[in-house]
Image (cartoon, rainbow, N blue to C red; front, top):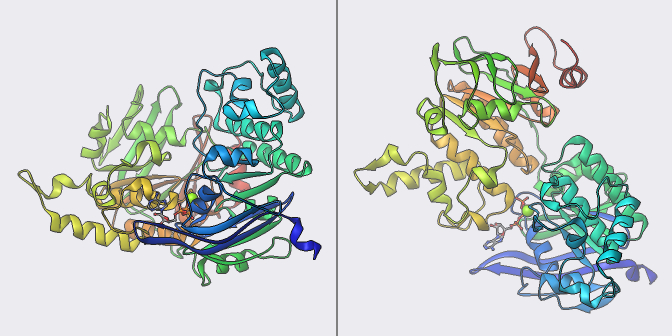
Length: 502
Ligand SMILES: Nc1ncnc2c1ncn2[C@@H]1O[C@H](COP(=O)(O)OP(=O)(O)OP(=O)(O)O)[C@@H](O)[C@H]1O
Ligand SMILES: [Mg+2]
């Protein structure tokens, strides 16, 4: 009987729809006090939407939210905060010129809390206390503008402590963190857990779920599937619950080796790169492994003309090329699926159809008329091959789930038919089922003769996908491994991306 009272949060019978399309169907979620509870499901399953209801950003059509045994009516994010529900946003919304202390005590809610009596000096002191307690190497009076995403996330944790939050929702918090930063975040999660604060944790990375979460709930297609303890659960069980089927053949089985060199870097240097040399063959998949900041994204940016090179040469089909801006690269048949898709990849206010056909427009604009038939063809083809979940091709990208936005970006570049395609962290934020689809698609492209570069921080992805791997460390190439000559192992790659020699 006591059991029920242990739930800090219960959401019951939640229904949500947009423009007549039902997104959540009678969803429930029960979270115990002081646990780290994973919310799992495929892209578009409804995880973020459910949390936006909890946060008061979306209004449910019907349903009940019970906090500490009491029914609450959450009408806005401000009200949610007042009830002790905090949100760790992935895109940080802080005002840049504010100090750390001002940021933590930001907002009207301060006036209604135990801190309303604080003057500036006390606010700084209290903040410093919190920062020190969390072991964060930050000063209360420094401006937040210069902080990294990881540090800004830590402020959210400090804020939760300052205001005795009950629940913190973390929606894919690690997607732009380095390995070290993930460790720090996990330590902080354990600390706030000790204080009895509950965490709802959304991530597509199963290893994180296994490491940090106590229990999990799964949504599939807007329906609640079930919930269980993490201890004793296997990856397979969880994945099957999420996807509704077992995933076989996650990776492709054959490796593709090319003959003909399409691209060559010869001693390329710029601010971030030191004498970077490698070659890329037609029809191969060349992996790039390295820690965050090793120069992999910088290599892609140089090739794409975002940060032009200062010395050295880039050759395409044996000819030295001068790539000063992305338009030059596109003309030469280079495509880049960028790491930061929100900023660089999509025009969010536009429709899926518009975004998909953006790069290929010139292929089918006759005079000034848009060939709608052709546009529809492209949209159909790619929305199917990557199962983009949308209400219609006219849906605006801003309303797609995170993972589905990424699928649009990838499709957009595929539709442009490049001869060299660079994919920077192609499966970040992508669910396991779709990951497999993307691997098979990349393989198919290489088979068609496209030269593919895959930059990834996920070792299994690099190991299982690449025919050769370039390892980078601090702007230098530390080695090039060929699967025909040696087996790729996690140990070997780790050694080389940490500065070790081949
Ligand atoms: N404001 C909105 N207008 C219309 N549709 C929306 C809106 N917000 C979400 N949706 C739709 O609701 C569905 C669920 O999206 P949600 O963002 O909750 O998925 P998710 O489980 O968080 O997925 P991901 O893992 O990709 O982040 C999607 O089909 C999405 O397009
Ligand atoms: Mg989401």
